[in-house]
Image (cartoon, rainbow, N blue to C red; front, side, top):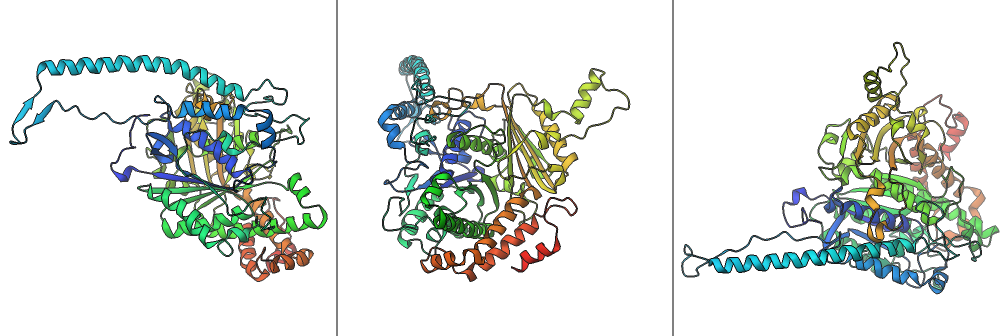
Length: 636
């Protein structure tokens, strides 16, 4: 990577962003995949490296912070890391190969310093106007030395290229093991424990596939652990919020880690926080947002809120019966409180429902699921990361047609007003983008050229692909998108280099505008597919087995499709405060696990208001329009 924009210069061109990950289960896994892809994009000249990466010891490292449990517990859903290490010692070898590529002299992550001008003359110390020019012989000797060094470097580079190819193959072979316990079943799915193992699925620790180079001091441990006997209920929202969080850990770890990252930025544009919808990590998110509001008010905040259904292992831990009800109660209350607190401060919130939107019905593991979510997020955020000379962006607002967008402009493109903060994410992987054409002016021009356009032929409204081709990662609402009100739509596409960018851009703009008529719309196209991004991508690209012709399409939509999510949060919070859980709630309140009921009333009012904000149009039949139910909910 050339040292362009990484040297000290005009800070007005700096647009740094920071990524914070809070959560040992899904948030850190998604973040690891996400940052792997960002690192490859930053070193392929497709995206601006300075937006997401910093220079540390001559290498590009992601500007990130991870929070996880302490060393007494691995960051896994199922505690099977010991089984993996005992029977498969390939992981340490994999790390060695990953580091060998990432930290080599010719690494793609290494920032080549700008060559300084040669000092061909020397100024006399006695007379500043007197110059002693070098002798011709000395110049010839220096030129010969330079050529010798260049030849030596070329030989070293050739040797490195051969070594890199061999090491890259070894890295990729680790993900396609011939051992009976592991097999690659489909693209991007890897290292899945066989049915003979104690559990059907094992999750590698996220730091096992978070590829180097890494920044120094990027991972910080919580003051609690799953194996701690001192705190039985440490994984609660109140334990992570400022009310019960250790003041020393808050100042010395949480705030200090963020202060160091912020001080390394000249003009921080925004912070992306990947978190989990309830528990201690949700509480830490609100604490972190409060700190950022005080220390960096101008920075925008994007929340990636991971939620998941009640998993089997949690039911076992809850000992069924009473324990399961307590677990459900805490989740109901904590999700509502987190929605209220983050909604007060964050700019945009993207709910991501893990494991709930596998419409194909195929079995999937956590590694595969989180990698798909990361792929969708990486494509969706191209608008503020792409280089000036790569791809194109256009939209309905004047600033969207500029050469590049800032993080703040990207967030502004996702919401027409501050009250609309919920943004859904839809995604698909496709081998052709021909489905963009029907009904567009591009299709009509092509038919006119080939004389296939018949007189009186009925025009098809463009944009049908948004309703039929995409899979929602944010909601389980299966209704048609055209039945909803859309305030903003942002389409991002990673396509093959052979694709026509301007035609694809025009098709996406017409698809969004004619069929859905959003207040704000934006399209971003990049002529670099996921395969082109990850091929020979060191450890970060070793496990992405993607078809070379495959394109990825992500759509961020601020619409009434978020109604079901907002309704469920409000309904669950109301249920948690009902008489059904009163005995459990009273006990948790006395133990300091949950706040007083009176402290939740404002949160319930906010959640009900958010639900009403995203209510679908009247007469659509997409919501409960019975007046009795409506007023009962709001008076509760």
